[in-house]
Length: 158
Image 1 (cartoon, rainbow, N blue to C red):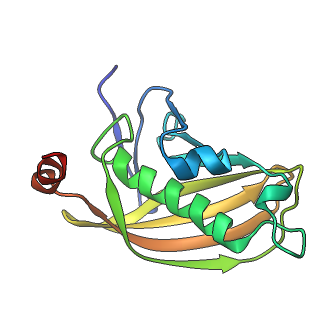
Image 2 (image 1 turned 135 degrees about the horizontal axis):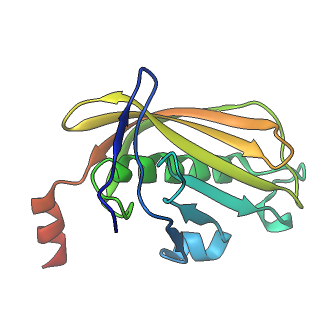
């Protein structure tokens, strides 16, 4: 794996890692069927899901909770990419606000993308967009994410 390159600009900070897909890592991911992609050329994580009837609400459109989950996962994985080129360093969601803009339906693929917009040593500010395969912007989100300290990971492992 090559050395990650950090890209700095006024809007975002992302790493450029090698191509990597994370599939079936958690029970939630296995149940819903979404895939985390931490290897795009811009280094910003993406989460995609092919929608079926199991992902819709009683109005037959994408359930808002699932839309939020996809955004949260993409934003958290984007945070992870700032410290781990494999996108697996755990980040916690401190807060997240979601705006629902349009509906998505079964048969469509939706993709959430995270972008770091600011932050410091302990907290990152990350924005997200959820877009349908036809280009429709379904939802946006902003959030604050915190890296799980290494000593906490060691404590949890014992």
